[in-house]
Length: 152
Image (cartoon, rainbow, N blue to C red; front, side, top):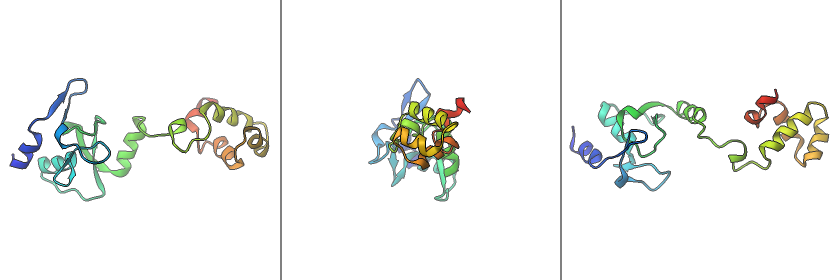
């Protein structure tokens, strides 16, 4: 093992709940990731441990969702789409009311969906004080689809 790798993994703190090994002394300036040698620590360590150089379009993903984790069996490579798919499947994305773009609630979205099944979209938009295109996106399942899935 190289000296840089030994320096990085020296002092890893085990998290007993999830089995992660985290490096608290290498926390970087953004997003809660650990940084090491001018890159994220998990990416640097993955590349050195596996003896590969990953192209910039390949991410090193955490199976545990712990950004500070450096446990090798919790790390895997994949595309940005793989990473975003992981986030979606693990409910780490902001959608619905959690989105900072949301101007209605999930209950309102369900009410709009139900109203749009029988009334013209312009009338529904006026009833709920939203844009007709918003009603259309809710009615067709392009937005708020998780909240209205049980109504379909």
